[in-house]
Image (spheres, rainbow, N blue to C red):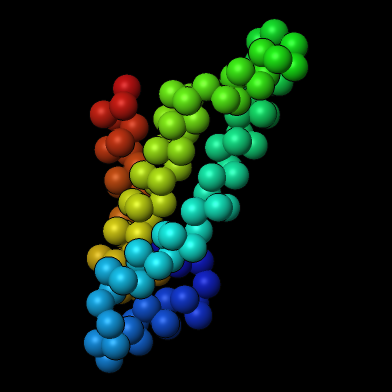
Length: 114
């Protein structure tokens, strides 16, 4: 969702003036944030590996970080949460409405995930 009022003003201005499709704005936003969104799961994997009682061997750690399925799952989870935030931001025209809707989706996803 939109943490800064300036981004919300830009989004509402784009929507009001029909400068270009809102889909293009979100597509550009997602592609611009890909490098920083890929870095998060890598750091999370490093923290989780050393806080859990896994083997403290460097080669095992590299194998853990390099496992395709582990990284793919973490990255897909991060992107799913980002896209859900984009969807909620596109639907709600106000920050308060978006802040009220987001926990409802989170609770539904937690219940379905088990």
